[in-house]
Amino acid sequence: MIHKILIANRGEIAVRIIRACAEADITSVAIYADADRHALHVKKADEAYNIGPDSLAGYLNAHRIVNLAVASGCDALHPGYGFLSENPLLAEICRNRNIRYIGPDAGVIRRMGDKVAARSAMQAAGIPVVPGSEGNLASREEALALAETIGYPVMLKATSGGGGRGIRRCNSPQDLKRNYERVLSEASKAFGRADIFMEKCIVRPRHIEVQILADTHGNVIHLFERDCSIQRRHQKLIEIAPSPQLDEAQRTWLGETAVRAAKAVGYTNAGTVEFLMDRDNRFYFMEMNTRLQVEHTVTEAITGIDIVLEQIRIADGLPLSHAQADIQRRGYAMELRINAEDPKNDFLPSFGRITRYFAPGGPGVRTDGAIYTGYHIPPYYDSMCAKLTVWALSWPELLNRAARALEDIGVYGVKTTIPYYMEILKVEEFRYGSFDTGFVEDHPELTRYKTSRPTRELSAAISAALSAHLGH
Image (cartoon, rainbow, N blue to C red; front, side):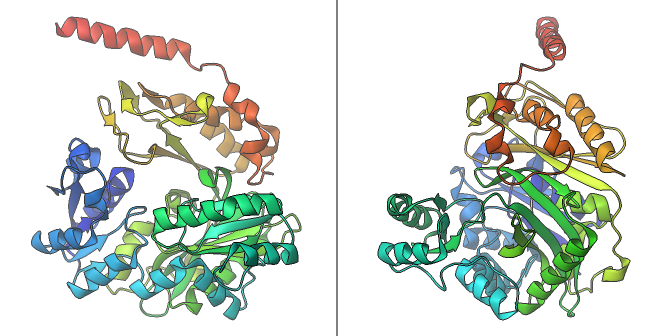
């Protein structure tokens, strides 16, 4: 049985995994760069080890991380998301050092991380994919010829891409000529491979993904879908489960198709199969994420399944805790990513000291975060500093509860996306549950909100001033 896990990550996801370890009576081991010396995951873990002064290098050094896992007596490693979570090298090194990797096999990570190979695998399994190139593009001329065949607009994508990077939409031959070298460069810098492919651009799709779990005994189940259509520049902002835009027949087809996709590639552990839904309600396979997703919290809220604990069980060689017939969904859940960004200033990152922070509470409200009063958000990492997850029995109740929770939460000292989300909740098509990936682009007026909660902010400032004065 697994008794000690090294968490090869930082921030809120590291805190999330630490909590799961505590519930399972498993010792948690955190790692941290100098910039994270005072981070919450360091404070909460049973043990914590410094990985050097460089803010990024330590988190990206697979050999050093696994060496540390071995030296500290760990028998398992959880990669979280981001950093090395979809790097097959980390999984391979773990296997070679007899450390259980809490994720899929390295071969599956490699295959599904290659978007061209993933497309081919899905086509072989009879799963619809977006029309596009059969393999990597050899030249700009080949790209231009193919684009004329499948029709504009098209998307140029990095073969090893992820996280919304290495993607460019081309509406014309001129766009394609201008963007071809850019995507090649982005692919090389971000993913170490100058390989790109092309897909037909599904205009204004709905982005729907399905959470799956698969054990080493051949059992594969789905935990229903999430709607991730509210996004900006291919980066998700709000996720909802289940999607308010699907009927039961569509929901059933998606779940069964996701399970078939996982079985087709011999998948194990937790993963996500992502689809695009066009205006004619046709679904196309987009990609498969071979890791825990940021938005796993909404799936946990509607199913009651602890996905991280299931990951640990699977890595331990145990069968899934539940069969498909046991999985029941209840109500609706929404996750709002609280980013340290200024929506009024083109979402420019807003790093600095949290002068005051308090989390919301009440029925159906969950906060996953890595911040606290006095914490300095470092400028070296992703701008997400917390996740607000809200659950309710019905969609209208969910909207009301989300608005109340956003009023409750307090993050001061930096700009955040909180007031922006409050504006989104007021938009008619969002409230009707009818939106697509063009929603944010269609509503630039939402960033022109008036400064919210002036009384509370003034009270916080007065309290801080009084505390400082009395402290002297």
